[in-house]
Length: 232
Image (cartoon, rainbow, N blue to C red; front, top):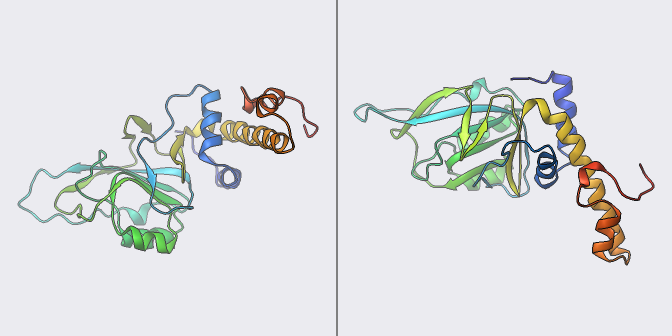
């Protein structure tokens, strides 16, 4: 795992905050990386963005239902700026995140949470503006149903692996992961994608045919920042 230094991480975060998952996905496509999308993950706080290195959490089903099992305690160990990535196997039968965790995470400067499973107390998390993303929503507690397996291990989100330190970006379009060693290059290419699309939009709204604008500004390979323009 490659971990960015604090100054570098903040610079990357600032650049990423100006982008979106669409441009980042196009940039990842251009690098022909393994799957980056976290399938089935949707926002529970419309308009909110989560961006930061992954702090991974894995749950497992309980194997002893004769003893009361409390909620997992790990939130105090999550570094500020991280995105918590919870793997509960995509479960729709119980939750792994609620308003108490959202409140503490927000207070501690955690960037957001992505749950491969279900969350609850959506109204409260949304009112607080906490960036929360999940596969589903239910009110059923995870207590006495699942327990913490471990933190800091690679997890699987519907077929997409997420390693500790990979960067997570989530917005209204969904969520994706960027391998730690590729973040800077993905940002560079995503910024080029956005510049290319801005030029095409300006030309089309200025009277050009869309197909001609796409050809002129290199829409087939927008990450190359090619085509005809004056601000290179």
